[in-house]
Amino acid sequence: MQNGQHFIEIENVSKSFRLPGGGVVNAVKDVTNYISRGEVLVIIGPSGSGKSTLLRTINGLESYDEGQIVIDGVDLGHAHTDMNLLRAQVGMVFQHFNLFLHKTALMNVVMPQTVVLKRSRSEAERTARELLERVGIADRADNYPSQLSGGQQQRVAIARALAMNPKVMLFDEATSALDPETVGGVLELMAELASEGMTMVVVTHEMGFARRVAHRMIFMDAGEIVEEGAPEHFFTNPRNERTQRFLREIL
Image (tube, rainbow, N blue to C red):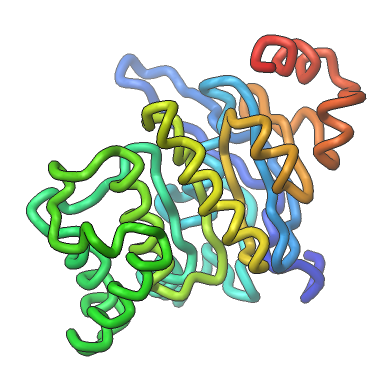
């Protein structure tokens, strides 16, 4: 353990899934990585490489079979860790928004605050309106998700996560379900959060964003970290043949 030196400590984490037919998929294999406060870590790799599973173990949405994850001194595997509180402090933005379809944009941001953080309705609504203004859709506060574009829904999802005052933000392919013309606005919002010092772990195929915003990148394949380094290393001199092949295909 790197005591006190890192904001997020991932040590020897493994996660497997049992298939309906009886087989086993080793989604994450003995992964170790350390993330500093205020760092932007971008995770890249092919589909099925374990990127999203690793992200979900950091958020506590997936348990892990072996290893240890510690966030700001809190051990996710400890029996007395309040996982609901932890998930509130580790904001996560998904590919498919995960909004409450029967609630307005405003209420999607208000509800988690009142339920998890026990804020008063007036305080939660004030925070929600400020955040909807910040993400550029204050005028859509009373619209339901079905009345919003994909980009607008993702902005609501980001506002909802920020309303919990998270210590870290996780983005799991946050732009992959968006129309091309709306991707840029969401990426700019994410870049703004990064520039303000938010600790972020981002799974993405947006290589331009990664090159501009990431402090460090890792490439995963078959559940393992194959290569790690600064963005310039990845885009100018990747060492591993598998990394080289992936980047040739995606760039």
